[in-house]
Length: 179
Ligand SMILES: NC(=O)c1ccc[n+]([C@@H]2O[C@H](COP(=O)([O-])OP(=O)(O)OC[C@H]3O[C@@H](n4cnc5c(N)ncnc54)[C@H](OP(=O)(O)O)[C@@H]3O)[C@@H](O)[C@H]2O)c1
Image (cartoon, rainbow, N blue to C red; front, side, top):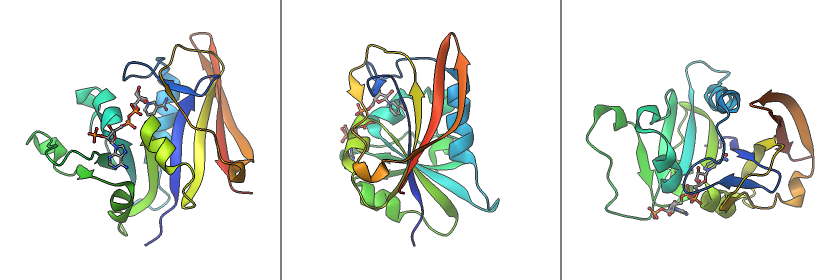
């Protein structure tokens, strides 16, 4: 089964995405865009899958995870990794490779979103199965220790699909796709 696979990311002026295991900024409207984009389905009987590295999962506030109305998949190579027995984690999957995570997508899944972080983006950015990249360009420089990789030349074209501003910080919503 082939599903469209997108990355979704917010980057600063220097492709910075994280600092000390967290987002370098607090942009509520940008988070809402992330939530709406990753939840939106054309077929209301389906949902989207979100795949994220172990560190990105850890960076989510416990009360906000798993991300609701989406099939959550955590990537880790740690074979002892376990979530608590809490009922809310029942539908969360743990995989030791990106390919295995993608293979979990069945006919109840519409699209797959790779949420990051830096390691996962780096490992998948050149994969020919990547359909597109939803990239929010934040027009400011932050102190970052994690970065988004260079976008391959095959993604040269980007379309501006919106923009917003909050706390004096402006940002553009871009979609990179194959020409
Ligand atoms: N700005 C944004 O849009 C955005 C989006 C997401 C994240 N972030 C930020 O990015 C930072 C986290 O990124 P990160 O690079 O440190 O970590 P990460 O990519 O979230 O997770 C890395 C972990 O994932 C596991 N992993 C990596 N490759 C794997 C593979 N091929 N198969 C299975 N497991 C694999 C490993 O877990 P184990 O060590 O357990 O084996 C590895 O330590 C945070 O600061 C976060 O806030 C920013």
